[in-house]
Image (cartoon, rainbow, N blue to C red; front, side):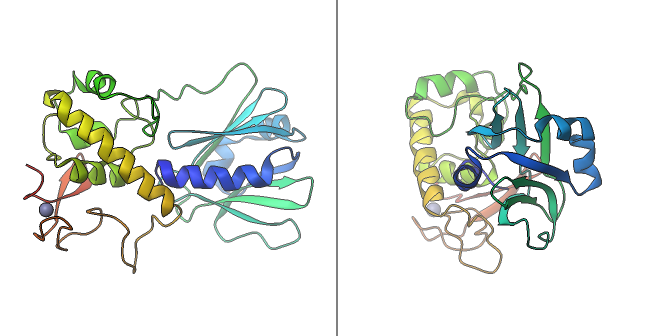
Length: 260
Ligand SMILES: [Zn+2]
């Protein structure tokens, strides 16, 4: 699933194409996207020009000149594809925005789980997000406070977007490896020193992610990650095998030797 660095890279590409342009035509091509983006929403957004593209956590917001906005979430597999109106529709195009300069922006998703919703002016979506995970002003003390009431494992707590926005399965595992913290440690019991290490690890992992952005799909190639998707491969630090466990239904990768 695309996380903060990948969604940020996608938003940057989107912004470069859509900012200042007018949405001539919007179309939903799949039944689930048609339910989210019904004809009245399409009518409201059509003809509007785009004044801002914003990323919050893993969400993208396209702000329209009348104050309305389009809220996009890639979920597991979504991505932008940029073509021309004159070209055939990309395979797996779920929603398309045709612009006044002949560009076509398609939200493509083989699994059709991505979401696009319209919000009228003055009624923005409630995203329930904590601070951005890469916010340089974020302190260990603040993160520790938001973890304080959590009795579950730290890996699962890091996936809670109300704690830190933008972190998912990849960067949670990566940060815990860097901070040498067990993914099973009780979130609320971490010391301030541990949370500070975790924050440092998160920032380093996200910075690596920004350098590799767009390459989160690891099938058939060497992964750019320290532990994620590297079960049974040697730990970069100690050489012992990376382990995989399942926490809250999601895979966690870690080094049992380095992360106690
Ligand atoms: Zn190790």
